[in-house]
Image (cartoon, rainbow, N blue to C red; front, side):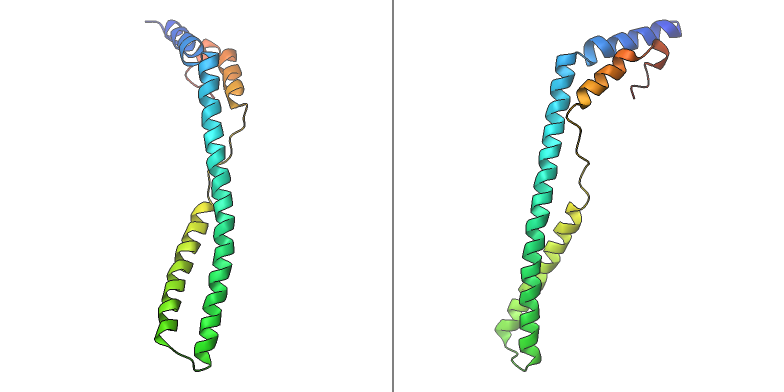
Length: 128
């Protein structure tokens, strides 16, 4: 099969089947909305975790201050261990939330469709 014929078939498939405007726009819009929703949740969760970490840090400091003043009790040691474990967990969650996927532009489907529509057969294998 000649290269030009193959390229034309690929481009036609992209335009007519893979890039049926309604299907592609619906799929990309749903993906962008879900991705952006997850990013908003991550950011909100990170803010909650930071506020909670501040409280935990303060509680640890208070326990350490009591212990330094000679008030070492087993209950304080147990509470300190619990707080330190929570502190570690919150720090890990905050670090994980710092690297979300980038938000996706709501019109990405239209941009992709225009790029496919402008492709000439020689460019059909490079959709971006």
